[in-house]
View 1 (tube, rainbow, N blue to C red):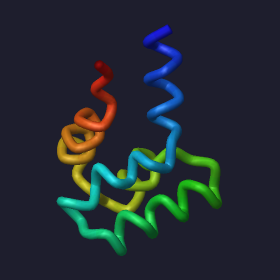
View 2 (cartoon, helix red, strand yellow):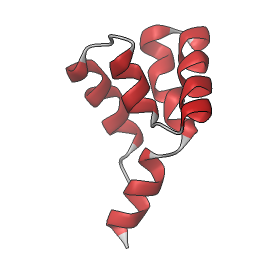
View 3 (cartoon, rainbow, N blue to C red):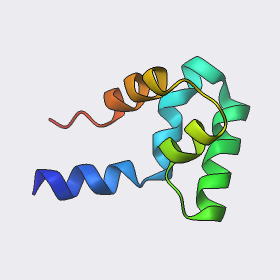
Length: 67
């Protein structure tokens, strides 16, 4: 089920690695940590921290591409 798989990937803390080239390791790790502690997704935390929605969407879309 591709939809379910994409949903699980979206909820993965590993999504933060897609942000590293743009915001650096330390900031991406802090976003992953906050996502873990609050139960929110990496996307939700990144947006709440003020990262531009279009850039977050672009970076995370690359991580969501499935074979």
